[in-house]
Length: 144
Image (cartoon, rainbow, N blue to C red; front, side):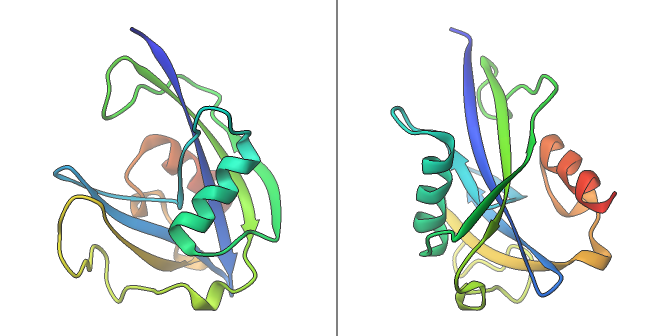
């Protein structure tokens, strides 16, 4: 059965740096933005707030829509899913309290569900820093 998979992501910029997350899902390493899938019964902003609480232990203090996918993107995990990603610029009350890794994929233990966060300097930002095509497009938009 073909279906839509709606994703919401936070673009968190602090001190001229952009927050990304390195994750290990199944056997796949990925670098992306904090966020995840919309759950049944949620609005887009509610889903983003939930994801920020789950991943960053903070409620956003501001949300500003940045980009919604404008092209077809098939899921990397389910061939019958079409991905629709929605990105918001997000301000957190305490970005300095996010536990930051020293290096890319610097997991304590590389196991399913492992996740760490890193800051990327905006002046060195490039699409090679993230894994998925939609995120690469968003990096290009941020850099333009």
